[in-house]
Length: 111
Image (cartoon, helix red, strand yellow):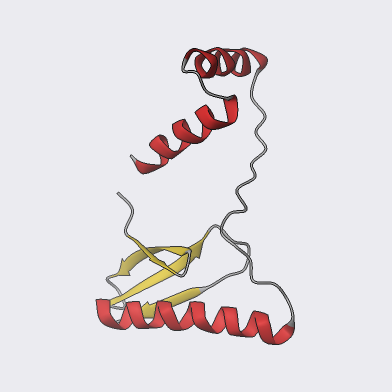
């Protein structure tokens, strides 16, 4: 299981650096680089929140839209056999392929 934090719709991976005796984190799911650190969990949490708040404030000030972790649109390329099997599974479940795939992806991502 990954050590993670979430704030204002942004998620980050958290690790501990034993050499420097510090926690550090990196925001996932966007191309911009947002990192943060702290000697304690409280410090780490505060720096994470400050990093996100600063990112959003800077984006607004410069007129550059802040990147969002996900748009909700996803393009997948799979072999035709997988596409066909997924379509049959979705129809058998009484769902659209989109509904079925969203449920399967959600379940897989939560395990």
